[in-house]
Image 1 (tube, rainbow, N blue to C red):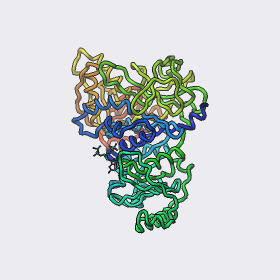
Image 2: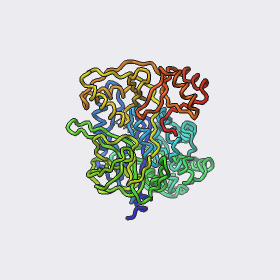
Image 3: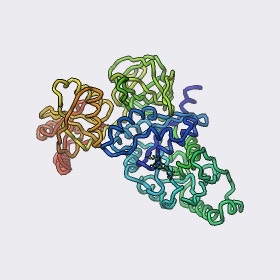
Image 4: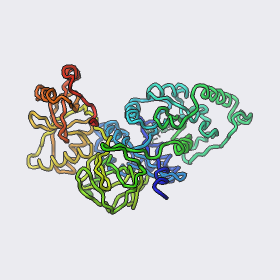
Length: 526
Ligand code: G4P
C-alpha cells in the first residue's frame, strides 16, 4: 500500500468526557468491534480511577499500567484506528490538552441523564481553539434521562457548536427500544444484552405498519414525529461543515449495552478526517510529504524501578517512520536511530518496523526528549501547538537533603520535560517555584523525586494568583515593567519572562497600567 492510501485509511482521535460519562466503556466497546480485545473489562481494569487526592499513589501505580492503554490501535473495515487515551482525573487535564494536539478529531461522551458537565466544557474550549472536528455520543440511554431534543439544545448551547443528530433514540430507560440510524437510514432494535457485540435487528422502512407491530404504536408514531421535527429543525448533514469544526454530529446510545456504538463507529470511519496537515514555526507540513517528521506530545515514565527508562510518544506527521533509521532530533541538533520503536495495540505493545502519519510511535528514552521536540530526516523545523497553560497553584520547592541537590535538580528537570508541572525561578532570590493546574501534581512530584531520583523536597506555601508570560515590542517599557515588578518576575525553563501575579486585582491593574506589555496565559505565542 502506498503512502497516500496508508494516510487515507487512518483515523487518529481521542475520546473525551467528564469523569463517569462512559469514556472507558465506550473505548472498550470500540476495541471489541476492532477485535483488539476480546473481553469486556480489559481496558477498564487499567483505568485510572477518579479517586480522592489521598489515593495518588494508587493513581501513580495505575499510571504505570496505563502505558499500555495510552494509545489503542486497531484495524476495522480496512481502516487503521488510533484512539489516544486521555486521563479522566481532572488534575491531569494538562495531559489531556496535550493529547488533543496530536489528534485529528474528537468524540465527546455526554451522560444522557446529566447532560453537558464542567470538564467537557473545558475540553471543548481546547477543541474550539484548535478547530478540531468533534462528534458527540450521548450515552446511557438505557437509563432514564433528559429528553433527546433538550439534550441537543443543551449541547449546542453549552459546547457552543451547532449540532446535527445522525442517530435518534427510540424510548429511554426501561422503555429503550433502539436507535434509528439517520446517517444510513436504518433501524436497530435494542436487545439489552451487555456482553455481546450487539448488532440488533435491522429494519429499514419506518413508514411500514410492521413497525407499529414490532415496537408498539406509541413508539412508532413518536419516532416518525420526532424524525419529522429533526428534518425540519436541522439542516441536512454536510461533511465539510463538520470537518471545519462548525457542526457536531450527535449519536445516541448505550455504551454499556453496546448499543448505538457500531453506528457511531461506522459513521466515524466514513466522515472523520484522516491525518491533517500540521503547522511548524517554519511552514505547514503535509502528511503526504515523502520525508518523515513528527513530534513528541507525551512522555511517560516507567514506574517499574527495574526499568528506569521513559517512553516518548511521537506522533508521525509526515512520511514514513522507519526503525533503525537516522533521524534528526532538532532540539538537540543530534542524529539518532531507534532500534526498538513500539506501536500500541489495546492489550500489548510490540516493536514495529514502520509507521505512517496519524500513527503514534513509542520510543524508549533515557532523557533525550522533552515534550514538543521535533524529529525530522534533516530539515530544521519545530512543530507548534503544545501550549503550557498558565498554572494556578504554586509552591516554593526546597531541597530537604543538602547531600542530594544534584539528584533533586535532575529529577525536577526531567519531570518538567515530561510536562508534570512547570518550574519557575524567581529572579529576585533565585528560588524555585513549581506551578501546577492540580493539587495532585505536588504529591506526584514529591513521590517520584523520592522513588525515582532518590531526592527529597519540601514545599513552602506561596500566595500567588497566576503566572503569565509577558512580552513587549517596546523594550523600554518591558525593562521598566521588569524593574518595577522585580520581586514578582521569574523565568521559565526556557528562559522566558514570567510575571507572578499575587491577585486578580494586581494582574488587572498591571494590564491597565502597562498597555505596552502583552500578557499571555498559555505559553504558545510568538
Ligand atoms: P469514564 O471513563 O467516563 O469515567 O466512565 P466509565 O466508562 O468508567 O463509566 C462510568 C460508570 O458508568 C460505570 O459504572 C459504567 O459501567 C457506567 N456506564 C457506562 N456506560 C453506561 C451506559 O451506557 N449505561 C449505563 N447504565 N451505565 C453506563 P460504575 O458503577 O462506576 O463502574 P462499574 O463498577 O460498573 O464498572
